[in-house]
Length: 141
Image (cartoon, rainbow, N blue to C red; front, side):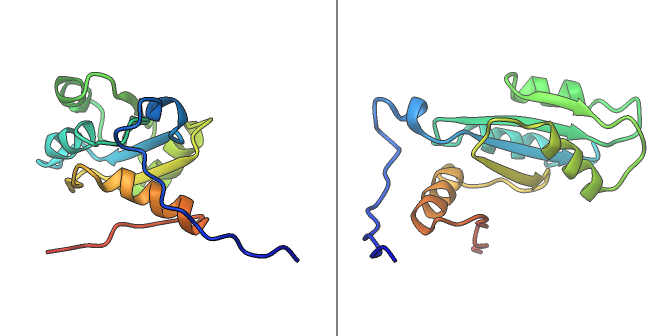
């Protein structure tokens, strides 16, 4: 049995090579196209201080929705996937997650929250320090 090593804090912000060395995170945003908060959510993701974050929006709305226009108007670098058949939030989240390859972490989220600018970085740092398979933000009012 090997002795446990002390964990050292992981600091990703401000490092010259942070984008190259930070584990890749893909935010899978699942939307039904009806939320009036979708744009706020995307702006918050676009404002994250984490250097290696990509966004995939999974749209399971009825056809004819303006979700693509709304997404690209706010976050041009986001990828968009439209679910081809009617489904549930959970099934759409699973479909979106299955499309992601090569990411160390997935951030599965609905379209109605606006995470603080450091949320992704803090969760990745916690996951790495704790060697965790899953982390979640703490709701603070």
